[in-house]
Image (cartoon, rainbow, N blue to C red):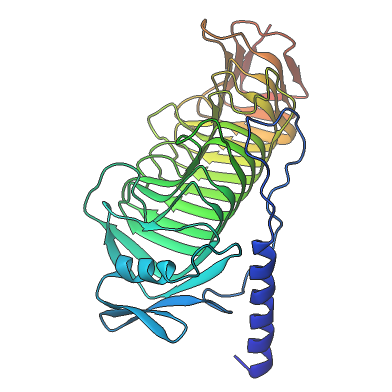
Length: 397
């Protein structure tokens, strides 16, 4: 890189770090009482390549030796990746109120029974691959953060079998940039508020996540108020591509899943456990641009008193279970712009007796080929419109 380009990159990164540190945390409270575009963390310009720009600490692999430094001070030397990265993180300014950045240069392994913990106001940029080996229990993860705020992971590649690739609980103002996980087991990204359910996790941004080979979900949330997701790409994962539980004020650009939840009832995109419910109602607050499902279990699944959702486009083909299952949900609009369902399981509107029946469901703008649309039992205010059936049947109320 020339001197001018390097200078511009450094200036851009300083601006990113300064801007990220200025995020204002919302008050911790019960879920929002109105649906509106949530003030997710402002988007900032990401450095063109991993590791570019300023940082306060780094962990660097040379040969088989890791060296962690804070400025010119060495804080770790040895062969253990986890210890090196944690030492670099721990060397950042104590009690800081603005983000400080750690860059990791090199690849290595760590145990599934261990974690790298990020305290508040920490940015981590991993330029290499973390391979997770062995076994563990609980909420261990290569990247872990709990009861913190202003956390950013700019780049992260994970292989192996972690319990979780990223685990964050009761956090605020989180940014995940370019995340790539080629796993043999485990769950990709889990962000929740289950440690203290009186305080929702707030203001989460996920730019681009690719997860393959997980035995559970690619990305899962539970108890999040305010999340913006770019693209979730799921390949051959055991359960859902993207699962939103009890999450409100969410915007998702795309879920692209192939063989997600094969042989199960999970789906490329699933909403469950009162997802989208605000107070006792379901104002539109879950907005999904596109869902793609090829093979796997279900394509789109809404269940257990969830709703308040608009999905603009769907392309669902050859799912082993229902292409779409909407069960005990409210105010859901499927294919607001366009969609295709080809082969695989039917589009099904159903209900369990323990919850109120479906209400205000709209199924529209679909071309359904070699499949079916079926509603049973009859919901309240269900609308089917502008659907084209090709070698398909329809049984609706």
